[in-house]
Amino acid sequence: MSWPGWIDERVRVSAWFAVCLAVGVGLGVQDIQAEENVVFSDDFNRPDVTMAAEADAVKLGRGWGLRSDPDSAGKRGGASLRSGMLWLGGAFGQSGATRTFAFQDASTWPGYSVILADNPGKITWTFNLRTGQVNPTPVSLSGGTTAVAVLASGNLDDFQFKGPCYYIMHGLATDKDPLQLVKCVHGVRNQDDRRVLISAGPPFHDLGNEFLSVRATYDPSTHQWTLEARKDGGGRFQPPHEGAMTLLGTVQDSEHVRVPMRYIGFVSNSNNGANGPLDEVVFDNLRVTVSGGPVSYATRTFPDPASRSFLLANAAVKIQRLRMTEQVR
Image (cartoon, rainbow, N blue to C red; front, top):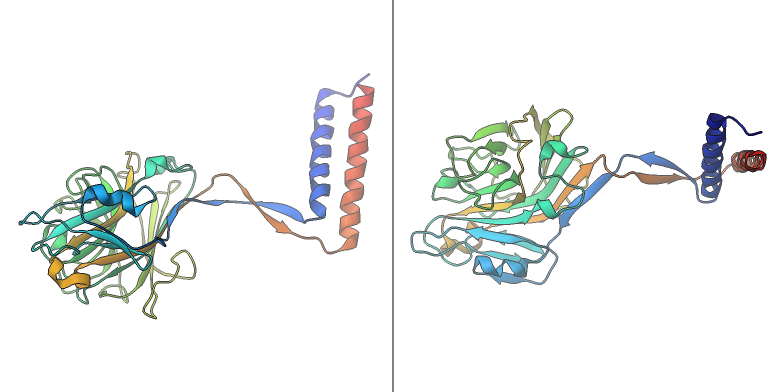
């Protein structure tokens, strides 16, 4: 005779679990924890290079692309890698305002959906930013003075006038320059349909050329967005994915989260390249993670000999029961 099928299966599964547990005792029992998967990261720690044209984007490495519109004289803002950081705008002496976009095509990232709502868990963007201007007061991204904008998630590589997007902006056409989380319908330069989701209060309501760490999140289960930041100090960036930050605000928004948005990256609005570094913005340590994907395992050891003996003995009993089951069958 044989055991009923459901008993068979229960014994088999229990025994195999015991075997795995017993093997793990020597190294430690492993607890399943939610994984925060890094789908993309770049610390820009590569040799210095300067790019004078969009076609030079290949020099950036890691799949980066460039878009830049010319000023009235036909000169474009530039991009460069210097001292292990990404510098955008103001590099080639243009006489008027230009916009430069260094972007990634996120559709190539494993474990990430370009439809934000389809991701298995919370999306987190972390990065560093700094503007060269002590008082970056632009007339928005359409105007002629220096601005900083970071695209959190955008649609088309014609970033100025096409596609919905969510982005983080540093610099306004007022006497204050807060950090803001913004959404738009038709590109970052179209101010008519621009909507501010979060605007920072003190001490992030009037920023200058501080070294900043920034973190933004979107949770598909609740459609909640958060914006956090930190003034790093010390004249340099700190890793933005480490340490505490100040919560600047939360908001629920789902307007564009079911629209494919392939492009993620950094935008600079630069007024006048003649000012050199003052007309450049600096970004570093971009990292994008998605939680809720494949599990990871955190090891916890059992130093108590009695605990190890019990687990091993229990495993032996279950293995014997599995053998008996196979013999009866």
